[in-house]
Image (tube, rainbow, N blue to C red; front, side, top):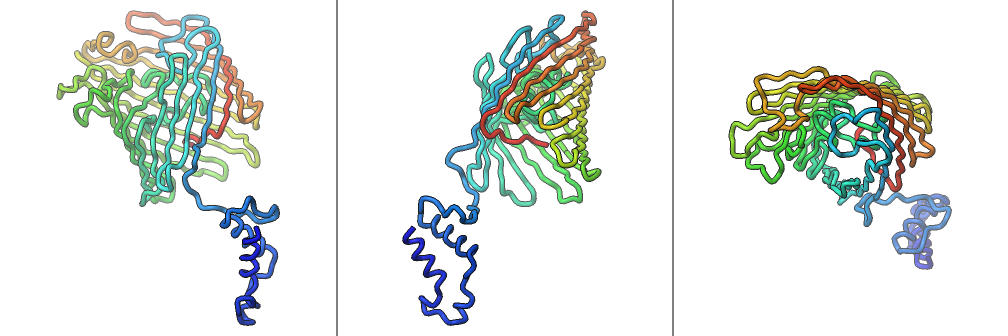
Length: 416
């Protein structure tokens, strides 16, 4: 502090350095300027701390020694009035009684001023896996951005988020579960996006990733022989401010890649195409955290297989009302109408039961209580009906879920 005081005295005393009277008149004399200079000199000379009344001097952004670390624990208790509908073991409740849905560990930080890294680990009763791990550019010109690594494909709205933390329900919508499975659509590869210079927000994204999704696709990274063995995904999303507090987002997506019947050596590989459209309408309350939001997605899947092809569509819609910082209510409806088959596709032998068309609908409601912003308790009830597989029959039943979730650390934001 002695050196800082000496330098400060020199800086604020032009006459001591032989300055002219005019320079002396221009020298800083107010207390705010003195405090600012003292804070800067103190930091420059490595003093223990600036004076308590000194103004905050912002430092330029740069890489941090330690990344932001967070952990989200999600647990559920479930009760089914009949056997749960067909689903892959993942993060949805699968049986009666208590169960661990997921513990998510996230590490996030800027690598340098040009690159950001995000890594998510998922811990379940099955073990530890890498949920996402990717790097994103921060300083490309012309509104361009790129990322590479292992990530959720840019398809629709629901598929891009970690649904346990970001959606108002315990489970997945039927179309996403049926078409992409419990782990959602993700893979390893690269993505490019651009924000177009228009009067409204319009973003275009395209990705090429491994097509290892075991539900609709099925070529693992180790089996890739050529570019057509990759899964191609594209999405366009536009956003409009309809009013002061009313926002509308609309999007269209497509995913195309080889399915499980494909042979990397066979040029006539069988493929699956999935098309989707989505909308999100959000009305914000004035001067509070309350809001009302409507979200819906439509999906259509067409898959070729030995002996023919199968087609099916699906849709869901939910309405959520956040009353205040502590309470939230939501309702959702899901529909998988009858699909169709052309020819005699060898589904069970080649593609498994998830590509076989079924008819199913479901309605549900959930109430969530947030004791603080780091905890959530949720109660959800579903009525599930009309499951009909080849040679099967319709069934119906109820599903009851009680979910508890806690968050520690600085959990990063997800796409709006």
